[in-house]
Image 1: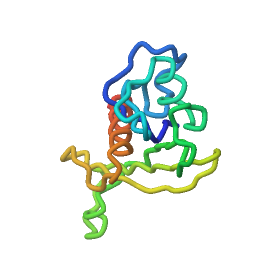
Image 2 (image 1 turned 180 degrees about the vertical axis):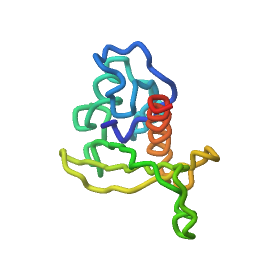
Image 3 (image 1 turned 30 degrees about the vertical axis):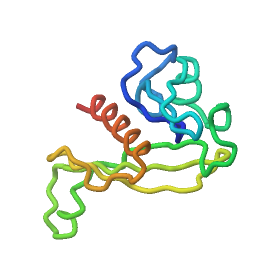
Image 4 (image 1 turned 90 degrees about the vertical axis):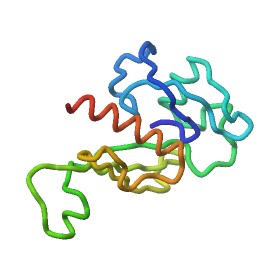
Length: 150
């Protein structure tokens, strides 16, 4: 799970994780904090490794005491035909979109969830997220996922 206040900006290739491909966003990322009072601040490498990329916000001193969630997790649903094609009955055997599921967690329990959709053939988000942090994390997760699958 990644911290919900983390805004990833670039790959973090040389972190000290034993298996970077198993990280919540599919690899390590550098970025900045968006938590109140720390907007735009760049965490140290240790904080990036332990909290931003991996941890629950509850362990980070920058996280607000009152918050809706501690972490966000992503998963890819089985590739499928786009919702438009499925609705019109034009399904074919080749998947042209991916659904990403996301879950917000608080105290190690789910508190909210939703779905995003990416059109592979046009390389555009059909259904994105309103929160730019979560959208950017989804983009990072998708980039890592596609790199592994292609």
